[in-house]
Amino acid sequence: MTIKRKQKHVLGLSGGKDSAALALYMRDNYPDLDIDYFFTDTGKELPEVYEFLDKLEAYLGKEIIRLNDDKGFDYWLNQYNHFLPSGHQRWCTVQMKLVPFEKWVKSYLDDGYEIVSYVGIRADEPYRDGYVPTQKFLTIKMPFADDGLVKADILTILRSTGVGLPAYYDWRSRSGCTFCFYQRKIEWVRLMERHPERFEEAKAYEKNACENSTRGESYYWMGKNEPLSTLEDPKRIQQIKEDHLKRRERYFKKKRRNSLIEDEKLIEMLDLDAIYDDIEGAGACTTCYK
Ligand code: SF4
Image (cartoon, rainbow, N blue to C red; front, side, top):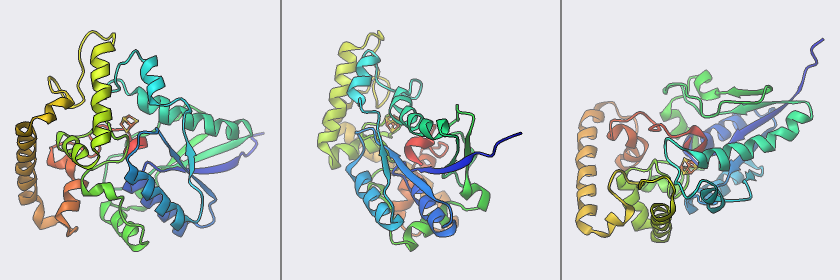
């Protein structure tokens, strides 16, 4: 005889718009579900993310559980022989986001629960596995995809609840660590302008990795042969800004007729991957930016 397990409903907030809108959507449309909202904190998040979580918490009327791995980025960097995380070696997401989540749900699984985890994948994007469960009784649900909600609906939810968008959408397209390697060059420039101390920290990590990594080659967050210190040259900054403007103009010429969103600056940040001819998310894990 199969014994029916108790269910624990959880929803991970990345600090991004989709998971936030999903939390609001679930609260307002599925009030009978007792959902635990959580945020896995790397300790290197943008200050705007913490401000946004506070606003969300106020609307949800419920504490957002903060998970972290207790050790932090510096510890793991040392464990990985000063080898910076990258798209190919994303140890940061594994050690600082996925493992703390797995540890947290383990006690519920051991206690006989089935975990139902809600993820903010929308109906207008390909389904992607932000989190591939390794535990047997962990089920992923995608209510936006199932209920047919698209990007414009997500903005409507955020605006109509008064929560709005995280403030970093003024200058950056994704949540996550200040030094996330998924940033575009223009976002590195803006990080330097908006949060110079966070930029200096990223620069120091990069310098340390180049000097101490046993990998045998230099890896730069901005790309081949381009350390962050390149941005000390105003000419390079100018080039990056001009290149970005050209791409932006080209994109807007194509986009204008179909756009449902009126604010160009917002479109620029929401569609930044498309401006750079990339798929939404550009390969980043939904755990970090959704
Ligand atoms: S936001 Fe970027 S740097 Fe931070 S954990 Fe995710 S992938 Fe790694």
